[in-house]
Image (cartoon, rainbow over all chains, first blue to last red; front, side, top):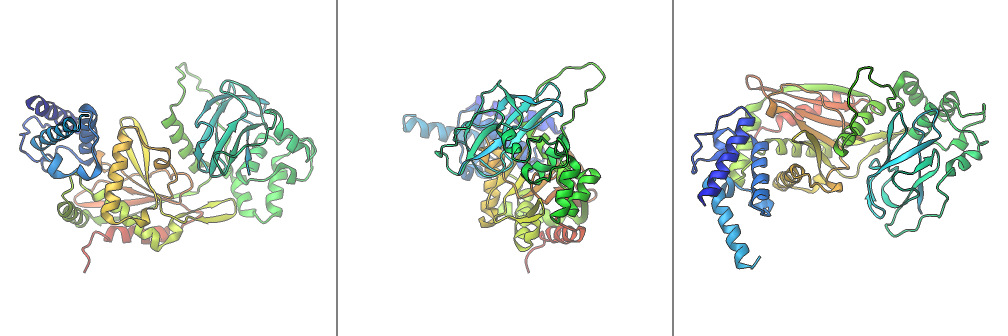
Length: 90
Length: 377
């Protein structure tokens, strides 16, 4: 779980840097869109990276602030998705 | 009924071309204007596009083959399982031209014939080859004088650039995405009469609308661009001439509003197309566009999701660009350009095809779009 959060933070910092923003002080509970460090296109890139990096298939209806608004929320989403996949024997 | 797709003449002096790339497998659906194959000579490459919607039934040559100009390159039918006529792969069109005395058109004449979809056999005999003057005379005689003026002024389909840079450098084939960009730019250069207009507006009003919508639906992403695009669709429904183009001497009003939205992915620029957008609610449109943008970022747009735009929208606001004049998407008359605000005031611009729209049409529509950020009374 901590590794996932670390990876997500690193990706946010990388994407923010591409826009000239320093996101190194990002906290896990901090709402990422509200920081202004990532614009919508960068947030979209973050979701696409998350989906690809963790081999997940994310339905459009799941792309919400609740599921992806913070590092904590993203890590929890991963845990739920992984748990669901394990339960179904995938 | 299957129809032939002919091998074009790329250079005036080359009677054969090499088939270097096939864009689609036999049985694949294509829409008018979709790339089907690339042919080249030592001097230039030319992309052969589908002349109408249908299915590529089969190719009459294989990649790498040298084929005759005017021969049938491929057959396109209305059904995937249709069987095309069994025609020899060479000199087919020369036979067709033969009914007009076996004359081949000059390069410019061939481009005009293709542009206006004229059968060479319709052109009266005036020499050993079909000349540009003969084609222009035919256009005049058939009431297409406006097109003649455009052609004479250089508005006709231009020949592929055969010039070479004088300085040393490396040659690299264009990627599929780069070829798509080239086709888009060349369509505007060849077919449209582009013009630009813009209005300014108070961005805070639209931002407030987007913030309300985002909060109401718990959206992760700022929906402002998608909402602007959705409002453009509504305006195009009220003003159908925005959702139209010109082909030959006819105006072509589209049955549906297919909103093309530019998406930058790394070095590539894609167009994600929300088809039949007039049937979607605002939230459905926002979600559909978001889904397509994700697919574009993964380079996973399906052909039907990346083609068929009837009206366009683009933004360069993320790069703090305060004004830009985009290129029209092929067979569209309008693309709206969203830009970053300066001191709270932003420009909403549009490139439009002056053959279809007037500056007045466009400014009225842009003002409607700008003021759509206001809450409903």
